[in-house]
Amino acid sequence: MIDQFGKVGILYGGLSSERKISLMSGLSIYESLKNKDVNVHLFDTGKKTLSELENSEFDRVFIALHGRYGEDGCIQGVLELLRIPYTGSGPIASNLAMNKVLAKQIWLQNNLPTPPFLILKKNHDFSFIAKKLGFPFVFKPTQEGSTIGINKVNDDSHINDAYIDSLKYSFEVFAEKFITGRELTVVVSKQKETIQCLPIIEIIAPNGNYSYENKYFSDKTRYCCPANLKLEIKQNIVNISEMAFSVLGCDGWARLDIILDKENQAWILEINTLPGMTNHSLVPMAASRIGISYQQLCLKILKQASCKIHSFK
Image 1: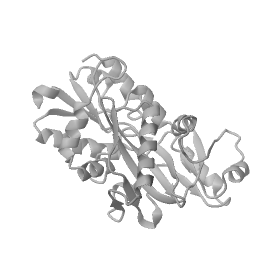
Image 2: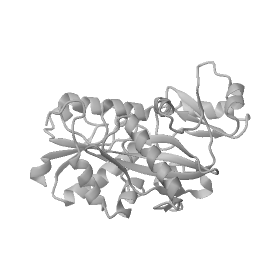
Image 3: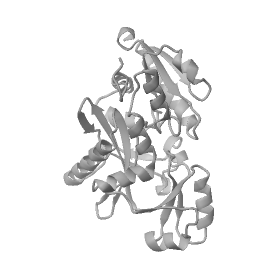
Image 4: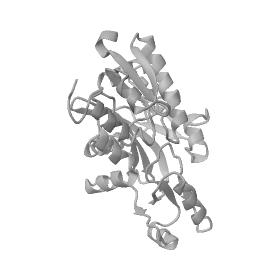
């Protein structure tokens, strides 16, 4: 393994609000690869400098960063300049996927279903939002993940407070119609030119609230993998997931969050190009359902590391 991969860096930690989860993901990946005798090293981008990264002599890196500066194309651009092959999507696809509004606009242009939304201006009219989307709706930070900063609005009594809270996490907030239904997640993998979906997972959270706590730390959240879906519904979700991944130009792997409403219409909420790899994470869960262990998954992802703009190594 050492000869195959050379010196491997695990980029983790970072500076985003998801630093804690990134530290957990990175450490799990590190231990897994170390146990397979890979020459692997932890590199905390929140504490170390770009010059240290440049002088690291990494032959390839496994990106375990979540949120800003790790998932938004910033570190991918740096790695392209340093000519260090890396896991996951390239700078452009990463940036498009991280920006929920841009991703939704591209999906709509490709006739993919995503809930109605409004981009909020500085002098927004809350009454217009309620009139256009109806209650309930949610405020979402344009560039944030892990359900951070999302506020559901059931009536007009706390609209301003909800908006201000969401604004803490991003320079821009948008409003999106709240769709009631089954919460699903779909892991999409690309190897060479082949795109495929892993088994669909249904998330059953306490009181229907898949919050940050329920996502990463609670043992009360239940998961059904594969989700109990009729064949035609499952195939439709697979089709739209693969297309949603493809039209953004994603590479490697990603996870899509989808709501299936009461009429069995699937709605794409967002895409995560660097999904979590903790013991509560859904990518390892979906992989294990088809016989891929955590260690095997880490090795498969690492093997796909490459520069996306130019091929240097």
